Image 1 (cartoon, rainbow, N blue to C red):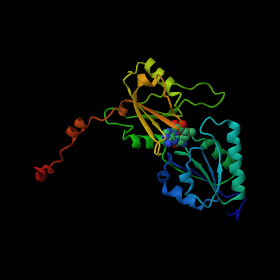
Image 2: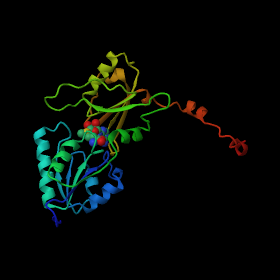
Image 3: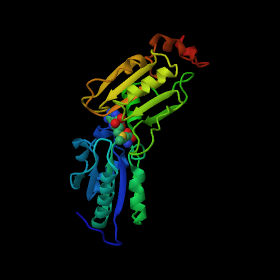
Image 4: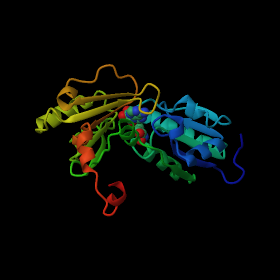
Length: 259
Ligand SMILES: C[S@@+](CC[C@H](N)C(=O)[O-])C[C@H]1O[C@@H](n2cnc3c(N)ncnc32)[C@H](O)[C@@H]1O
């Protein structure tokens, strides 16, 4: 443990922990964790990940989602108090800190006290889910735009759930809300056969990948206990392996040896 040597505050790092597996944090993130005096971490951060900072004092903050603003204000205060006590303070957040991570509130609180902050990006759940399902979010001729969205809104904020107009939709915090998404998409004329992939606990031992269709999603997702990501769009269709082999481009000249 070390306290601030110069100036009133230490430095705060907002680090993306990635989707869960401890080897999916960035090298930079792991290096800062190994030097941290204190780590304030989310509920989604695993014990394996915390083994990357055995020396640090650890403080669990935050719920899985739907934190109230009072709780966020308490986290902001803890960050400031810890920056006053320690030189290296880590705020470790699931996925990437800059996506659905309340980073704006934390950055504002820290910046308003003149505290030095650095953000270390992480692998967001959508990209980890695309990798785990081996299902690219974009696909030539099929999907050229992607939206990461949530229907979870701030308390007292009007419902903002107009659906994004993109080829692939990725819904965060959507295990219950995805039903409404499916209904809205069907009402807009999207086909009930539109492919959907649901991933629970992506990158962890109990990862579950479910393939279904929009018409089935309308009836809900039973039995989800961990964090869930819902990906919707033609790009989620199962690959036709036979079609892929006929796609293989012949490189001029390369055939000479192969023939
Ligand atoms: C508060 S948001 C935080 C998102 C995070 N900042 C990110 O970039 O992934 C939490 C939501 O992210 C998604 N999520 C995070 N980790 C996940 C995982 N390992 N598997 C599936 N979904 C995950 C779920 O939709 C969950 O409800």
